Amino acid sequence: MYFDNLSTFNDLVHLQTTRKGGFSEQEFSSMNIGFSVGDNPDTVLRNRMEVARISGIALDRFVFPKQCHTANIAIVTEAECGRGVFPDKKDSIPETDALITSRKNVMLCIKTADCIPVLLYDPVRKVVAAIHAGWRGTAAQITQKTVLTMIQKFDCQTENIIAGIGAGAGLCCYETNEAFYNQIVASIGHNNYPDYAASRHHIDLKEINRMQLLNIGLQEQNIEINPICTICHCDEYFSHRGSGGHTGRALSCICMK
Ligand SMILES: [Zn+2]
Image 1 (cartoon, protein in one colour):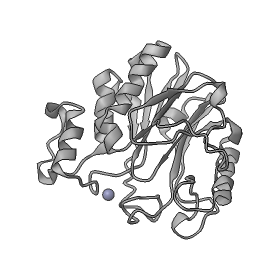
Image 2 (cartoon, helix red, strand yellow; image 1 turned 90 degrees about the vertical axis):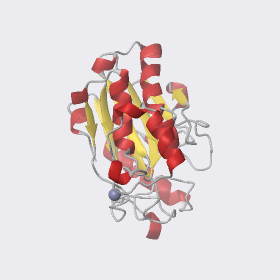
Image 3 (cartoon, protein in one colour; image 1 turned 60 degrees about the vertical axis):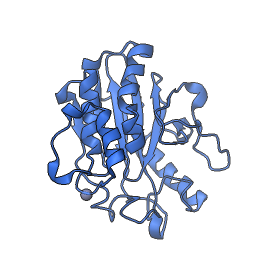
């Protein structure tokens, strides 16, 4: 899957995988990108090589963090290329849930199964970011903090940043308890949250990430949301909740050529 807004830039490669097009079997069928879910590592590596082939970016230029539902952000350089890619090395960037780079030919990678992937691009300062925003990361404002880091470290201006919020858990299915609900809504200020009175403890993670981007200054027309709910469509998309916790992981990635 691709975002229309990011697809208009010729110097950019990005995508979010579905379940289709890989080599894994049964609950991991077929394009599982994650090593830590119980799939055969050789098959996962083969799936990753297939994404590399389709994207035109060499697999040893991909970078994976060890995602821990934090708001920790890493700035990636040439030195990190290939980290987290190969199963025997176990060298993912530790405890990190967002990656930023200004380097060309570096593929920033995020894995999800219901959590929200967010991809950012500043075409003026030439900076990209990939974010893993589950409920904890969203509550900790990881998306907003990533934009703030782009501003502080790379002199990005929010009005130039293009954002894609990917397929993930939808408002329809993402139920949570009152404590979690209150934490997440607090991340954007209670007054800003749309009144979902009929679904008091349902959370719209995509909308909350969108509001975090708007709150920090992104332009509404520069933010695109993939409306697909992975829980509703767990036959086509890996879904943690839709599968009872035993499933594969999708890849969202972005790279400047
Ligand atoms: Zn749904």
